[in-house]
Length: 234
Image (cartoon, rainbow, N blue to C red; front, side):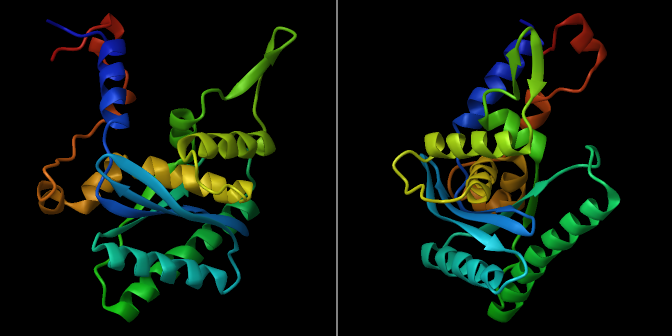
């Protein structure tokens, strides 16, 4: 029997929320004032180890990366970095795009350099689209007043991310800033993301009785002839 698009999406979302990859995930919210969070992920749990506010042009970057490598090694699990990706849209000007790219590059270089120093396995970099983690972890994208719907501005998105992080990591110490909370959300998304599962590899997942089922194409299906009819074959 055929499933509707809504049923396929609902079932895929349920499977997404029900999985956790066996990895240590470093969530990074790049920017001059950046956020970074370390997530301990294992089937059955996703735990926040720490979350920090970091100046991307300071030695704090290298310290965070060093701490992430050390923790992953102590747990004998692979380290995966999940970095926020903004796409090509939005109202940012050229200078802002260049600055964001430069700041993200600082983090990626630090990860690479520390890996070479340790002669460690290359750390996979998984890009997490900003719109994707926000839509998955934050219930609304705006609010309605006087019959008009207005989308959240940057400050409100940060506030909502902070509230989402408090909910997702209930019981953790949240004396942290909003950039760190965004990084925690990015890492939380990464602990279940298709890209993380693919980066970990079939052999590692199989050793834990897991396999990577691509769920994002089901959660966000492209427009097809079947979709227009409202049906998808099993």
